[in-house]
Image 1 (cartoon, rainbow, N blue to C red):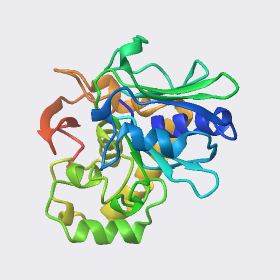
Image 2: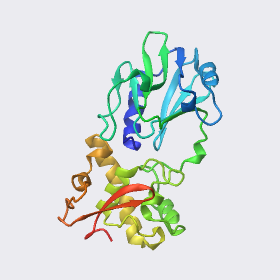
Image 3: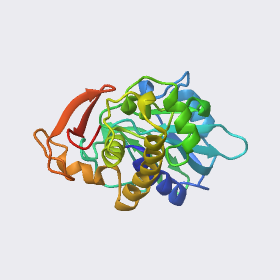
Image 4: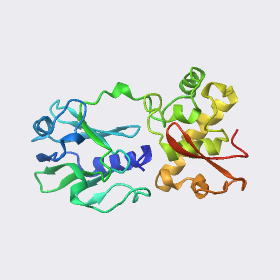
Length: 262
């Protein structure tokens, strides 16, 4: 499932292949997919004859800036979206969604004047396209959040630590897999109250969060964590062999070790 690592892979493909090319045609066949007050007609008008000049990312959100003071195009991959530029798909095949390229799942795209194309394919239709996203609605990227910021965030919340880490308005980029991997590596129960963490807990969590993002980024995505081996019903902890507990926390299926996560 796309998290910040998969979004970063998409950003790299966009940066390498989509910039500086004139947009000849905009394909927005699904009006429901265009969000926050925009319409397909507005998006077509805003993008046509422009060029993308920068590909950015905040958390899971992709941002494509246009030339000549044009608007920024926001792309969100949802739970199953993938970016395709000139037939090149960003990232490894998805684990929890089909990777079949059904034309009906191409929710948005552009054709460049040179004949190439950019598409956002989303079988589950949970992604989105918008113009000039409000970038203040996301917290700092998980790779950039400081320890002091994290400490202040946790101290002011009684929410389960997992739910807080996955709140994109607080910290941007962590999804279900990265959060479970980080807490498993840190030894913190995902249901534990955020404000119950000690100063040492926060320091360890901050260090592990950044290390986890870097390590799994090098490996190829959020699905490459050590924790994944035990992420099945009846699974055992890859670290100590204890039972893995399966729960719903923050609305997401959560796996944690009954022994070393406290």
